[in-house]
Amino acid sequence: MSSRDLWHGARIERTEALCADIRLFEIALPAGAEPWRPGAHLGVRVRCGDVTEGRHYSLLDLGRANDRYRIAVKRIDDGLGGSRYLWSLAAGDSVEISQPQNDFELGLDAPSYLLLAGGIGVTPLLSMAHALVRRNVPVAFHYAVRSREEAVFVALLRSWLGDRLHLHVSAEGSRLDVEGMIRACRQDAELYVCGPVGMLAATRTAWQAAGRSVDHLRFESFASGGRAANRPFTAALPRYGLELAVSAQQSLLSALETAGVEVLSGCRRGECGLCAVDVLDCDAPLDHRDVFLGDAEKAAGSRLCTCVSRPVGGRIVIDTDYRGQPAAPAA
Ligand code: FES
Image (cartoon, rainbow, N blue to C red; front, side):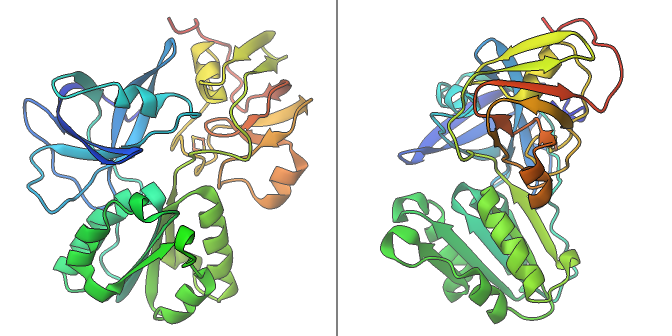
C-alpha cells in the first residue's frame, strides 16, 4: 500500500449493477466526502485470500452531488481478488478507504483536449469530461469498448458532449483508429488516456510518431491482465536467504511486503517503476504488465515491476534495489 494511504472506516451506501461485470459502489463517511479534483482516485482496502491489500479506484463524477464517493469496479475473475472481494460487499457493509489522491491531474491551461478511454478506463475521464464541458473548453472524447454493453457511461457522456463523443465498439467493427484520432485533433491539444497497457503503448507510439510533444500526453493504466493467466510461482531472494511461495491471487510485491522485505512502491499500477527488481534468473516466461519498462528491457528480462508483472509459474530469482534487512514478517 502507498505510504500516503491513511485508512478511515466508511460504509457502502448503495450498489448498482451497471452491466454484467461492472458494478457501481457509493461509499459514505460519517463526516462526509472530501472535495476532489478531476482524475482523483480513492484507496480501498480489500481482502485477497489471507492478505489485506490496498486498491485504487478512480472517483466518478456522475453529475450528481458529490456528497459521497462513487467508484465503478469491473469484476476480474482471474485477477488477484480485489474486485471479487468488493463484489462480495453490499449496502450497509463496512469498508476502509483512504482520502482522495490524484496522480492523474487534469491540467486546465491547455487550449484543447483529447480524452481517450479503453473499457473501464473511462472512470477517471468522466470527471475530466464534465469539468471541461462546464468550462466550455474544446474537447473530443473517444470511448473504445469491446461490446456496447460495456459502454456503461455512454448515455451520460453523450448528454455532456453530444457529437464530440466518439464511440468505438470492436464487436461491431468500429475499431479505434489511434493514428487517425491523433491526426484529427488540434496541434495544441493535450491527450489524456486511460485503458489497458496495450492501448497506452500504441497511443504513446502513435503520439510520438506524429511529432506530438510527450509533455502533452498524460496516461493512467489499469493492469487488468497480462498475456497469461495468473499462476502460482516461487520467488527466491539469495540476498535474504528467502524462498517465497506466491499464490495466483497475490502480486510479487505483496508477497515481498508480507515477508518483511522492504521494497519501494508507488503507483502499484505498473507506471512509476519504483517497485522494479533485478531478475537474476527465471525458469518461466515473464509476463510484463507495466508501462514503465521499455520494450528492450522487457525483452532482456533483467528487470520486473513487481506490483503488476510476474513469471508464468516456475521459479524466479530476484534482487531488490533496497538493501535493508527484512523486517519482521507482516501478521
Ligand atoms: S509501484 Fe509503480 S510500477 Fe510498481
